[in-house]
Length: 164
Image: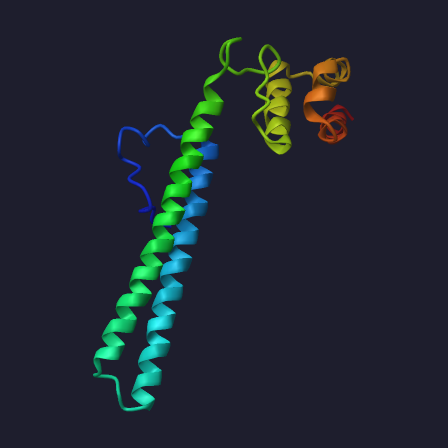
């Protein structure tokens, strides 16, 4: 996939996190889909006009310009949405008055539950190589119960599978 919805070599976008890169990929896929749809619409118009023997009329040129303008408007909306998402994600990843976000010292409540799951899983996987000690520490972590919600049991099952 060629990324051209934003310039990733630009200094402001050269240091994106994996979550932000995923946002860029989704926006790029949406842009590609919009442009492909516009291309199909123009081809259908051409075939229709060829069937009516009016393919050289100015109506084709005007309609193609309208299709291109609409596609560009939609791509611009996707790009603007992406830029807002990237800015919001950057604000949410820096930290708060308690310092930079880091589990368990200063957990990031701006993350979704699936992202929280990954943060806590990575924390425990890096904490120790002993799966039994890891499971014991996790089971005593009262912050994880509240922070992960229903994902707590899922992570417990995962960590216990390593301990067996």
